[in-house]
Image (tube, rainbow over all chains, first blue to last red; front, side, top):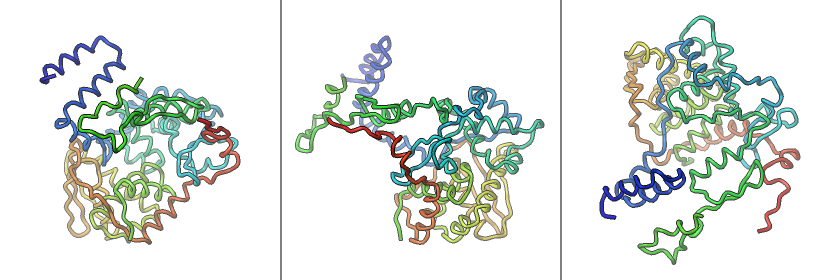
Length: 223
Length: 167
């Protein structure tokens, strides 16, 4: 391959193929231009948080909830199975865990992953007459988190998992797989709804096997 | 003295504020403020005092929310007056830690901020941030209030419980 034109030709040739192949192609093509892409790694973190403009008032906020969060507002969170789970941080492992709200201790220390429920509660508490959101939050500071999530989703459509994460039917394995794929995990081997075995860096050279041209080790073992 | 990365310190600040009883949004904002404040060489004293009186964190968070709202709607610089020097320092750090570009000036009790809400912050972050052992202990002790102790039930139902890897 000699030029960006060659790269473009390869990329275009893959467009009729499966999404998985296109993803693989993108990863391979990016690897070829280290001088162009290595610096981008420094831009992948977000040290400050999302840039979102505040709502002009509670009517504007309500409209955003009705547009983006109808699925969340349609749930009845009083129903035990819609709020059975609670997420918490384990003192022993300092890791997130799931508990049963009606059977286990610790629900009073719940981690705020009940986002859908929070947005539903915010929607229910919004005033009939428009007012500044800051004025509303002065009286309802607990709703500030839901307001922030609504504002973020209005600008970044992939910023939320659109599911009730405290429902009895919530399957953490789905979120876990998505997250692990970002780390380069392959060969997922789920053991339950809570954990999975994966493979990271299979086939990677050991220290004494490293060579200047040994940067294609991962491809043969991907399948 | 203790040495922290920005991310570690910010996360610990969020947990500590949560452990002090601050709601999630305000705790998240406090964590960002904490890292910015200490990275900029701010005093630990007002941070420690705010964690001991968490209504202070709620009040400061609300003042910043109102400033952002005013800046967005009225498209002009916004000012607040804060007579307490410690709270004033935290307000400045709070504004400095926002994700957007902020131009801040302070005169007497008055803080004036010009916020460019659509422009990402260009503030740099230090590699490590140093804080006193006492501050670190206060943050850790408060954060520990958010952790749930293990129980027989949690051990029996946790990921991998009862399973043994044989290969």
